Length: 287
Image (cartoon, rainbow, N blue to C red; front, side, top):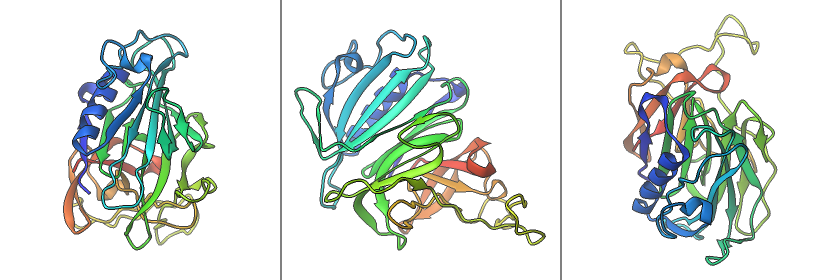
């Protein structure tokens, strides 16, 4: 599973920039746009929405539904992506996703939708923004906080047909109760219960309490180690997320691409310059 990413420079982007880039990357990975509403289309077309409507306080910024590639699995899920503006600025965003088994391509109505999950994202100018897309899912990230949907991995690192919706958000959220959360969905059952994403602890030898300093697992070059999560935890413990990973700060160098072995191949991840959940460094998949 190869991922493609785009990281916006100068800590600034807009809904229009992020979603037009997502559309471009998703199509190259085999995703298919099924429906975009009028707001998302903006000055674009039904097959190439521009997401450039005029921002307004607490106003929808557009909705679009994409069909996932089959990618050797059983079912092609539909993921609806929705953005709204937190205020009148094009850089202040609220993001949501809903999983479904299909969508009416004329009306946009979802078929067998799951719950709507979302986050109050930091302003696009409050921290570096990026997105990562592959055949199996995607993630949006702002200031080391993220929201994403992807095929779930088992604890034995087997890619499953199931979906996991996941996020880390410090602010308010929709669907999720907040913090680092996830929910799993299978095709033949309802969504499972929401649960926290799981992380390896690794406390220092001087203390076993939750306030202990995390020990480093890096080698002498200060740029190796292994991810401490997040592991999916809804419907039992699963594998580490593909598009987002977390390392201890001493096992990663901010803003310097890090090579991680994924499915037997070296893949690059970009480490965010600010910390994520629990003081860990958050990395987003670039390849």
